[in-house]
Length: 500
Image (cartoon, rainbow, N blue to C red; front, side):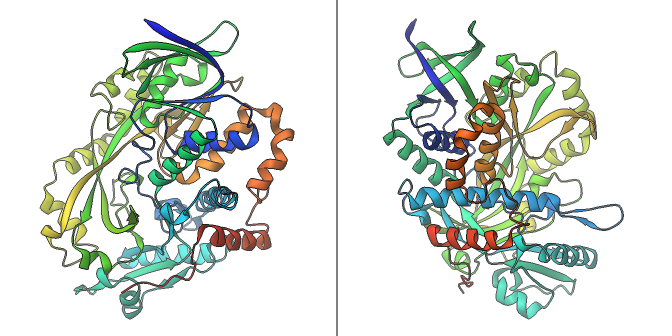
């Protein structure tokens, strides 16, 4: 039985960081618009955005080695690192604007200064890291990065990792103090709290069951009110599908041509969480290593200081896992039901191409705790099993599509927006760097979907994002001002030292 039919300007599906970001931007650009959100869980930020489901690195390519690629001629391509860092600077500017205008409070609840480090072993990897350091150091975005092979210096930087290390294997690290730890769960909750006060309607325990194009070109969204077991129909001129892993199924229901020949491959993650306060206190950084041969980019091992509920934590991982669910709260049939006539060959192509990835995931799934501890001991040589517990992280759904470079069924590692040609509906798919780049990704989507408002909105966007439309690399003075302004607004101490 239907009990409600409403017409909106905008419908947001999913109450995660992406919808929170888009809703906040739109409320600043078009405060009179009628925006509504539907979320099947009982509160915001509980799936991919949740702090226990998200690495919270504030992905700025400061430490993630997979964002710098060695080319066949042995030179380094840093373009991806530059792009991701530039995107994160945009997100930081937007958060700073919100804090300065009292739309967000207590920024330390969601962002903290934390050194970002890369750590490698073996002569070949040390050479790679040195080359990476030299390439990035020449770029103003990475100013302040340090490199060291000196074990005494490394003991200062990462005492916990160097303690008890007896190997004479070459070791090196880079360190940059302008890194951050971001609690995207806390940020999402704060943004929705502000949005609800600002008149944006959020409906929790409401599951979107179907999306159909109406005769007038708008979109009709069929929603199940889970508490009252009633079906509702809501229409909107623009719909954003920001349901994490659940976005693919909803995108397929729209029937838009752009939704064809796209598949999804779910990967779950596990983290080791330290329960010993003495061990936690000895480490103060996010330290990323190099992915093992055959491992996917999202399985880069890292030992992270995290601030969760304003308390210092220490996590190591991720260990890849496999579940056919597209969401932690999803269905075991998610993967099977995502295979359609139009993406069947794309999915088969991906299966053939990624046999080694499948083998890797199976090996990861059947690992014992002691085997996982052995991997941890590559970072902390004398780690004790009783100091660490295993926690299941969020589900990530990697995009599979046909590409010119990769051919049929190419697995994509990144964040992608798929929108209809007329810009009336858009969906966000993929995973890392995801949340960190939410602001620039949503701004790009608005340009694509609302070109008619570009001139009208431009001045306001520049007020929110001072660097909008400019390359920070090409404007070093603007970059310095952005860094200073962000640090001041967000309470970031760029010279924070390691606590022993």
